[in-house]
Amino acid sequence: MSKAPAPAEAARIILSRVTLLPAVQSSLRELPGRILRQDVQAERDNPPFDRVCMDGVAIDSRAFASGIRRFRIQATQAAGAVPLTIAGLDSAVEIMTGAVLPHGADCVIPLEEYDLDGDGLQLKPEATAEPWRNLQRRGSDSSPGIPMLTAGMSLGAAEVAVVASAGLAQALVSRQPRIMVISTGDELVEPGLPVADHQIRRSNAYGVSATLRLHQFTDVHDEHLRDDESLMRRRLGEMLETHDVLVLSGGVSKGKFDFVPAALKALGVEEVFYQVAQRPGRPMWFGTG
Image: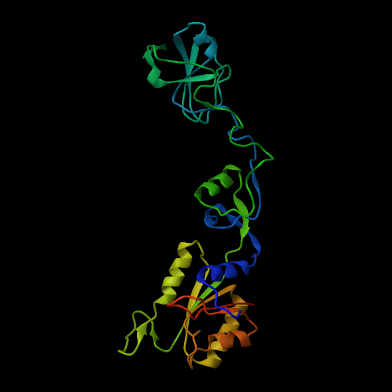
């Protein structure tokens, strides 16, 4: 590229050269931040039953419509229990949030709208009991055969929960890229080691690596290369064989010891652009293998 691209154009060019990595099966705990490579469908209706959304009592709304305001508490049904059957119009089942709606019931009155009285309850004047009140109907979220998630989506916390709700212990996602972060220069000294007045700390690589990990990239390594042309060519060649992405800091300007562009070209890496229209930071090299 003859003209140095602006930063936004440089970013577009880089993204246009990104290639698709192989797909791998990963467990639910490994999914956050990954790119989904399959559609995810519900294994059954979701919710799989008419689900209670409030703690209260389940009744047949026809009883309320007929004028009944006092009900006999027939039993208590918790979430996860086999659904009971309403015994009659004047019967009610104490019910918990998340429970299956008892057979014969079509309404849940929240506990704030009635008073307990022995083995029964008396509805308060403000109580209402329209059909399907405080209930989530079966299949209202999703049904089998209709994708809840589609290939290409980035998996955040909510998406991982959806994968789990579909009954999947793992999902097909793009393999994590193998990334090597490389800093170059004889002036760099590792943190924790003695440093002379003419030297500086090796810090950029740690910042870049941290940024990558914060963006959910986990297969990240780093290395420091001295300003030695033969060493640089040899190690870069080895890294190109074992990694998908090399991120280099230093060695790409026009100085006598800036060996990176020539070394990469010699290794068969195609130069896409060299320099970006920005200051500081104009020397920026991007290529693909």
